Length: 203
Image 1: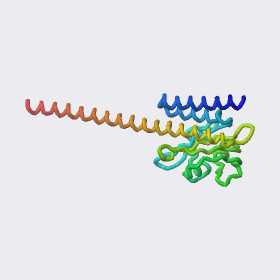
Image 2 (image 1 turned 180 degrees about the vertical axis):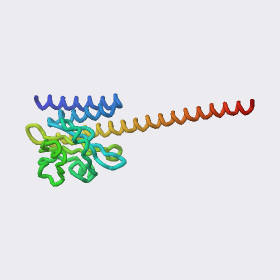
Image 3 (image 1 turned 180 degrees about the horizontal axis):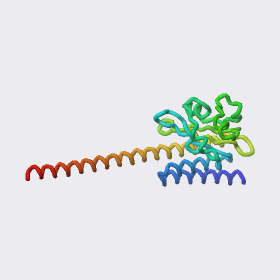
């Protein structure tokens, strides 16, 4: 594949993902598609999406490509902890050329899954200035991650952050609508009951 063909493929991936973000509110479909796209964009073996749980302020694996997804979902980190927590706390994307030699690397995922993380793009996700999570793109095929790879990862991360926030907003609106509907139904039942009581009293 020539550099021009590769660039055309990468741009098409980004356009397709942007279209997906704008066409569906299914958060799982968006997140998984985005993580899968990240590996194709930069030629990586795997990728993971960690999201920040707002109540407990912990990072957890929302999507992890590979056979160990269920295992990784049990891992929890706080901002500042590990490589993911570090880039989230500083809001600075990084290329980690040697993950095993990085002092921040906790090794929890590697220990639990047996998969060795050698190189990584760690990209913090934020929306409207608020931290959302971290995209980790793991193990470049046949080489090392480049500054161009990081730029692509950041562009993709921006789409993911918007998709995550849109899905969360939709969920809040949906819950608010359901709550309002329940309150309205209870009020209607109360008024009907009160009306029946008044008729019984006045008759």
